[in-house]
Image (cartoon, rainbow, N blue to C red; front, side):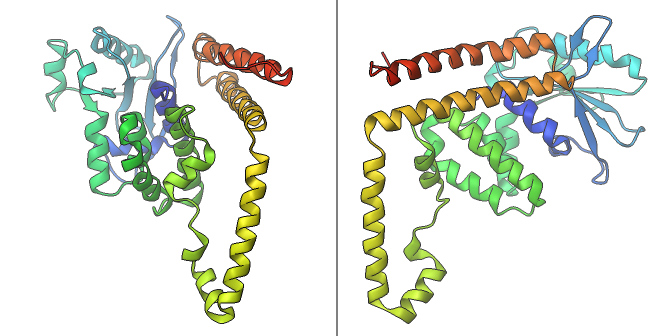
Length: 309
């Protein structure tokens, strides 16, 4: 399962202008995003979006990926705490599922009024709207709402929506990296990297490429047979290299590196002041426990014992 609160935070930290997808504002306005810390009460808010036009309101957003009957009060209180910035504050709650919304009166009714700076949005509705206009953000955000049984049907289209978009190259590459990482987290151990790539159609079969067709047309069947024989030889070699113990060993090492990279990434966020020490500890504790378990399994596997119970 994707850790939705961490995932959405990482997305908006790297692409804060994505907030414009959810609100009405001028297209020339750009935002920065930070996890604002209220020092008086040692409170760090989920996300505060700051427009480069000081006449526009700040947006305090709460990302809600689980049921919490007090979320409306927490969100409004967080917005009030930002009063020291001497700016108009709008508060927005993003629910990852409509069923997570407690609809607390009278705050829910206030959120339905366009005259009050409190609003509620539901991520599945946003994703659906983005899909209709082929916005590449739908490919990423959809992974936070998708069910496992729907992955095979939707993930390939979402991936293509990102890679074929007109986003700047750096942003597009970042979207692709996040998409692949979130997808692997969602799948767990059900698919390895190559199976995921096959599902997404990342590697086109060689006989379907334009280069192959041009070569085959000129050289003829002989060259095609040579390629076929070479492909068979590579396939046999690949089978020999992927015996059970060796594959298990590599998979454990890969998972260990992935967990270490996750911990290092959040350590960097902590060192840069983007998340608090307490949040860092709560996020990385299960990661460190998983890392210790993986290392224990790897040691047992090297000794020839059964690594998994």
